[in-house]
Length: 426
Image (tube, rainbow, N blue to C red; front, side):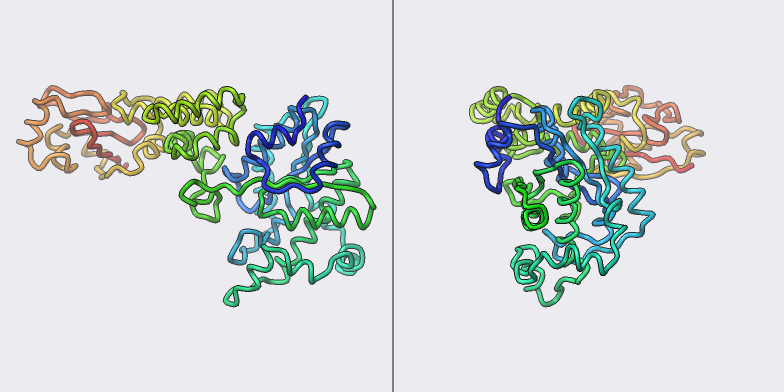
């Protein structure tokens, strides 16, 4: 088996690493327990979380044991890392519901039934039992406020006089450090991985293990996900691509990858797929020699969508993409069609009116795809009138419920690219 550090390096996954030579030797001589944490601040993970998840999966393939920590305790506080504002505090019920949803998502990517099975833990198990006095005595005494203030995530918030940082968020670092200690005691976990904004929290845990157990622990951080234009992944940035298909459809994920900039596509293939480096190298050559083909983006979209949403999700996404290029529209749900045509104008009619039948020329005029029935007739004669991407030839056609493409949506198209959605009000 290759050394995990070499695998991470060839994929461009290491931003910072503690005591690389010692960690490299540990990877060579033993199977490590490695953890990454996920705070349940929403009922779904997003693409920003997928990088540490897949890094755990890579480590598991190399024989190491992944531990996923769902932060039932830390999620109630909020991590100041990478944030400019205080998080809203969530109730215990919301935290528990979010945690259950996240656990189901993690099971898609990690093997929980093998010789080095992944494990899930929740830090509420051990954090809830601490009294405030015990916390100050057993954990707080090991941390210097001076050192905590020098952590980049804390310093940035303190320097912003208009916002600052609450004592609640300031204490987050100590809770995460104690998580590392607990996982060391319970599972001999000696490595924590996470995004580069977690470096301060990770090193705090390394220091706590050294002080209380006189043992060596390690940390690796990955690059923060940004596109070549500087756009950050993550829900706090307002552009989240969720792993829950109800929040971000498989089609939307597929289209997101198809739209990746050439400068990002190869990097994303290294991060978000398990393709061999030889295959990725071939795709990189394709980007350089024939960028218009967008082969790297298509492979990225297919591999990632299949991994996250399965073969069925990929098939539906490919079909939905074909719809945009004139493929016949059938067997889609309202939600799927609305996702496909998210930027297309729409209007509504009543079910009673549709039951009576609406002339196709009238419908095209009412939708704005033509200025008059005469113009609609001319468009029809030229072969440019489509309902659900099926060309219509008879000007006397009456549109009825049988022309719906889904439960309550009909798709009109004038010419090659002008679409309009008709929604039925029941």
